Structure formats: C-alpha cells, structure tokens
Image (cartoon, rainbow, N blue to C red; front, side, top):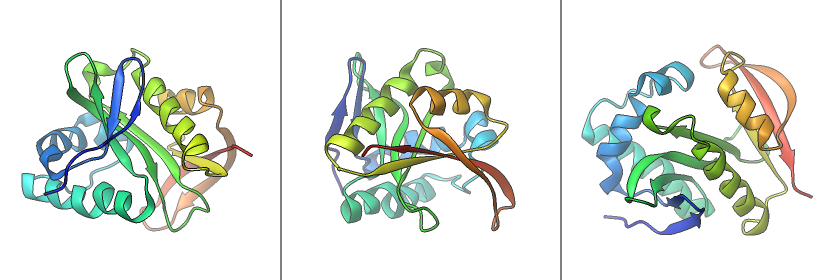
Length: 174
C-alpha cells in the first residue's frame, strides 16, 4: 500500500500524492455530475476500479515522472476536496494541468489556489519549460481559470479517439 506525501502547501490547501486509501474519495469525485459533464465518464464505478485507476494513474505517474495529479485537502479539516496536478500525455510535448473540485468547494478561489501552487511547483521545483491546459470549448469556468493562471490559447484540436473538441492552452516558463 502506498502512502501520501505532501508536495505543495498553500494558505488553505495541502496537495499530496494519491494513495490507494483515497479510492472512496476518488470514486465520488469522478462520478460527480460536473466531472462527467466536463471531463467524461472514466468507467470508474466501483471501489476496486477506483483503486486500480489510482494505482495505474497518479500513483504510477508520480513514481515514474516525479509529478502527477495530487489529492487536494482542505487544511482546516484535512478533508479531501478535489484533485489538481500535472499529467503527461503522449500527444503533448509537455504536461498539462488539470483540476477538479467537489461542487461544495467551487466558487471560492480554491481551484485557482491549487492550480497556482502546481504551476509554481512545475516552474521552480520540476524546472519544466512549459505547461499545457486542455479544455472543452464549452467549459467557460475552466477557460476563465486557465486564462487567470496565465495560460494562453494556442490552438483548437479534435481528439481523434473520443471525437471531442478541445482548446489547447500553453504557458511557457522560460
């Protein structure tokens, strides 16, 4: 069983590596209506599937690359409220930033706080030259956040496998 390590702290949040112990929270998050509408159904509908997805996704990527999607805990009560971090995709030249919060925590600036911490970490600790953002053209709240984070529209793309339209944003650090 893996354990969690705090990677980033902000005034209100702690971003830590995922562990299989986060499976119940992850199962809830990926089946929220907002996740399903903006990110899509990842076919994670059981606790076992959630554990497996964590093991082959964020936990494996953290071991391999030194970064991943992190569990976002609210520091006031250590309750997990979302995920935020970086993912390396074979189709992108640099990792892209992603974030999702439980609906009760949206609209409080917490996604911006978490994502800002991830971008600082990407630049100052990981020494990455750039970070991308992949956003559905219909997801205006995410587009607003991406712009506020300093990522700029680069191009439009159609994802061939899923047939979805996507806006690609980029922020260079150097």
